[in-house]
Length: 103
Image 1 (tube, rainbow, N blue to C red):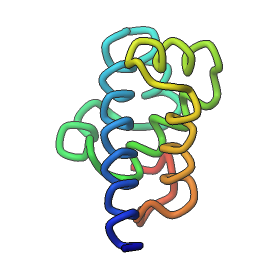
Image 2: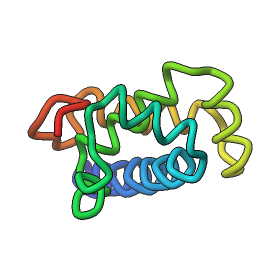
Image 3: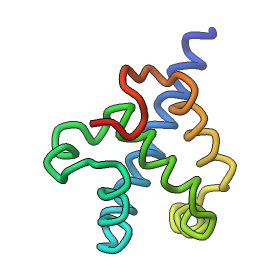
Image 4: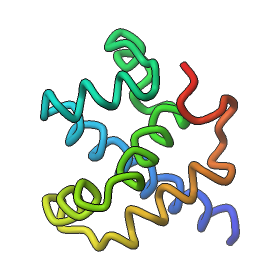
């Protein structure tokens, strides 16, 4: 039972993270800021967009900017708390093998 709950939580967090990445990349100013803050290069994202460290960094970026978080949540029809839960998943463990923001 716990395994199925963790799998569902992971899938939800990954989906929200990928939607957030798409949201950030769609706006050049936000994209450039995200890349500058994380040190990622666009090529880093090509094959690693669904990697836990990338999704965690994306969601961390949203947590740093309340207006951005609220805009993303409204755009996706999500409650901000759902985005926060996804961030928490990656910020705690989330299966990541590298620190957030490291490529």
